[in-house]
Image (cartoon, rainbow, N blue to C red; front, side):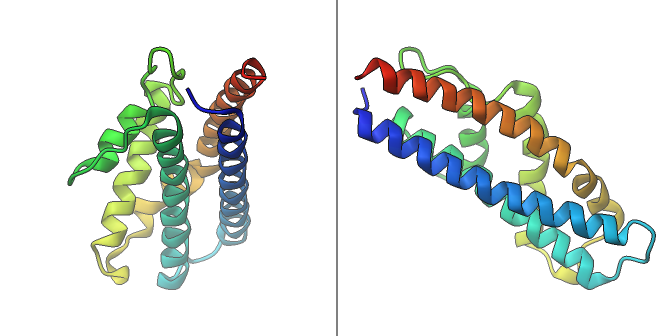
Length: 164
C-alpha cells in the first residue's frame, strides 16, 4: 500500500498534467475558432497535429504515473502504449478502480493511433480532412477525460484520508 505522502504526490502530479492538457485544449479550440471559416494551410494543420501529439503525451504521462505509483507495473515492449491504455480500464482489485471506461478508452485510442501516424510520417503528408474530426472532438473528449480523472482523484483523496 502506498504511503500518504506518495498518494498526495500522485494527486498533485496528475492535477498538474490535467492543467497542461486543459491549456492544450484551450489553444486548439481558440485556433479552431479562428480557422472555422478560412482556408487551412499546411502550417496550421501541422500545428493542430503537434498539439494533438502533446495531448496524447499528457494522457500517457497520467497513465504512467498511475501504473508506477499504484499498479507497480508499467508495460514494456513494442505495444506498451496499447497495453497501458487497456490497463487504465481495469479495476486492480485491492488497489484502485478503473480510470477509464471502455468507451472513453476507445476514443482515446483513436487519438493515440493518430500520434503514431504523426511521429512516423512527414508533416506535409498530413491531411486536414483526416485531422479535422479529432480537432473538433478534442474539447468534448477532454471534458470526458477530465471527469474520469476527477473521479479518480476523489478515490485517491479517500485513500489518502483512510491512511491518516
